[in-house]
Amino acid sequence: MNKFIRRAFNKIEKLSTDEIKTLVRYQASENELLGNVFQKIDIGVIVSNGKGRVLTCNDTAKRLIPLSRPLSEGTSLKYVLGDQDLANFMLQAIETTSAEEGVEKEFNFQHGDRVRTLCISVSAFISELDPVFDQDTGNRILFLVRDISEEKRQESRLHRSESLASLTTVAAGVAHEIKNPLASIGIHLQLLRKAFQRKKHLTLADASRYLDIIDEEIERLNGIVVDFLFAVRPMDVRLRLENLNSVIEDVCSFVSYELSGHNITINRQLGEFLPKIRLDENLLKQALLNIIKNAMNAMEGHGGTLTVATKLMGDHVTISLSDTGVGMDEVTLAKIFEPYFTTKSSGSGLGLTMVFKVVKEHLGEISVSSKKGVGTTFTITLPVPTSERLALEEAYPS
Ligand code: ADP
Ligand code: MG
Image: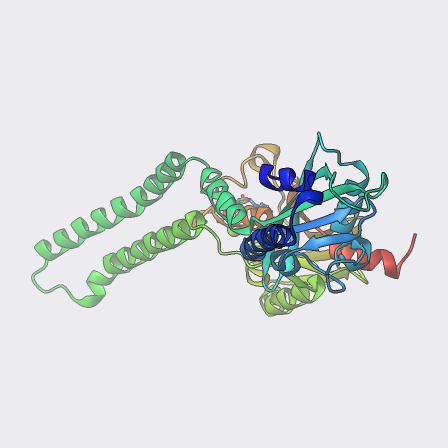
C-alpha cells in the first residue's frame, strides 16, 4: 500500500465525501493502469489462494497453459489444467511454496507441429490487506508462465553445432576424403595427355578408359561434398505425435523389393497397442533406411534375415533391427558412429553419424550389439510423451 493511501486510510473518518471520492478515483485509475499492463505483458500470470482457487489471471496465461476447461477467476486450478504433469506440479506447489522459497520448472507441450516449452515459476506471499483474510486461504500463490520455446530452440541449435565432433576433425576428414579422388583425377588426366602424345588420332574408345575413371572420381567427390553438407547442416526437426508402427511398415515395404533381390527376408515383430511417439517421420525413416542399408551390405552375397521389432518398455518404446550378416569386432564397433568411419571401399562413413544425430534429436538413445560372423542388432529407444503415458494408464490401469 503506498504512503498516500495509507495516510488517507488511517484518517478516513475525518475525510470529506469529496476527498473520499478523489481517493477512490485515484485508486481506480491506478487499478486500470495496472490492469492494462497485467493483460498486455507476455508473461502469463495466475494468482491463486492457498486452496488453489484462482483469484486473478491474465490472457497470456489462458493462451499459454494447456487447459481442459476455461481458466477464469473463481475456478479451481485442479479442474482446469489440461496436462497431468503440470497439474501435479502446480497443485503440489500450492502446498509447499513459501514466501521464502519459490520453485521453478520447465514443461514441454505439443503445440501444432512444434513443441512448446513453458517455464513456470511459483512464489508465495501473504495478503495482509485482504478484508476476509483467513489463515488457511490468506496465502497467495503467484504463478508466472513464460514461453521459452524459442530460447530452447536456440540452445539446442548451439548444442548441435558444439556436438559436431569439433569442426577440425570433420574438416580433416573431408580433406582426407577428397585427396584420393583428386590425385586419381590428376593421374588419369596425365595418362590421357600421354596417350594423345603417342597417337595423333585418339578415338573416344581409347580415351574412354581414362574419362570413365575421371567421371567416377568426380561423382565420388560430389558424393563426399553432399554427404558432408548433410552431416554438418543443422537439422530442421519437426516432431509430431505419430504411430510408430505405421512408420516402420512404410519403411519395410519401401525396402522389401530390394531386400528380396538380395535373398533377405524381413521378419516383422511389431508390438501391439504402442502409444504414439513424438517423431519426425522423414528423418526417422531416413535413419532407419541407413541402418537397413548397412544390414543389407552386411548380408551381401549370402542373404539372411532382417528382424524389425517394436516394443513398449514402460515409458519408452524400442525399435530393434537385427541382421544375420558378417557382424563386427570390438574395435570396429567402437568407431561406427564417428563421422567418416567406414570399412567399405565406397562407403561414406556418414550413415550412422546421421542415424545418431536423428536419434538424439528425438531425445532417444541408440545401442548396438554385434558378433563377428553372427550378426548385428541396433536398438533405438524413444521416450513416450507424457500425454500418451497418461492415455496408456487410463486404458490399462495397473
Ligand atoms: P558406411 O555404410 O558408408 O560405411 P556407416 O556410418 O553407415 O558408413 O557405417 C559405418 C561402418 O559401420 C560400416 O562401414 C561398417 O563397417 C559398420 N557397420 C554398420 N552397420 C553394420 C552392420 N549391420 N553389420 C556390420 N557392420 C556394420
Ligand atoms: Mg552406411
